[in-house]
Length: 423
Image (cartoon, rainbow, N blue to C red; front, side, top):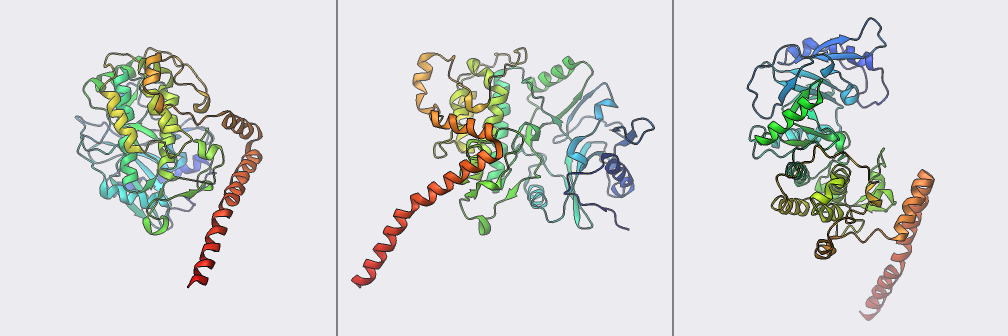
């Protein structure tokens, strides 16, 4: 009997069929020590959405890396749509909450998951690398199931009790990026949707969620993690070299505004600095309107986003600067009661606008000056003309690079000819 009768990599599928398939795998997982959440179709119609809820109570206390729990609604709190049909929630024999994801055999995600399983610090809270750990890998026919602790999503609205805790969050994510890059993993999709926190809070009253968050912050129990390696690539030295530079088509534009090198059609890019820029965009979108309360965020974000790739921070440099911010930021400045203000996309936001003049002078060398009038025109041209405009700009850059390299190549050939005659 074939258990997986579909291609796990496909994007288009019938959700109800997929949820029912997961439910049919219940006994297979039970034999391996995992109990899937109870499957609850919504009403009698197959076309309606399905819910999942925990099969049994989870006893406490919970040890890291499993999530802290808080909920007053067992059913609607566990509605799923998570993972686009490739992820389902479960519990182990001790009732601890898990997420199980189906991976396509031979994919880059399988390679990355195997590496993380071998190297994740699963039980050391202080040494935790801020990447969601892999607890188990289960082979199934030509594919794999990866078992992870089930953590909660990070609310897009900044809800950290203080700016200090917000910077701790930023530091944790940078540590996660450094961990990945030290293993030569190019995440390729660093964004808000791929960040989790080690707590599950599903309350009807949102204020209870804030209360739980702030209490865990006070006790220094929270950790944040990068996850979801659907698009990740393991950049082994044999294939990609010591310091990989990849063609820009290696990353797609996605649904959001990408870093400068992709947005402006550069011929190639540094994958590790690209991930830094993606994280910088997240920092800018989430904390950009808090810069007046923590001015040092301006030079940090500018250096993570600059179009001058040589000046752009590496993940380690960004972490060092974040450590400096932590030693200078107030631990009493609240963030949760400040309404979000949309200040535009990262490329047209002046992060230094309302900062003291002496601060701007002191940190002037960190200010991003790469955003010239020509850059603004190019962004306008690409966003207005979309795909054809991007290819036109990309083509111009490729032609310019080729033409620029001709004199050097010709000179080198001429020198070689002279050297041959001289012998």
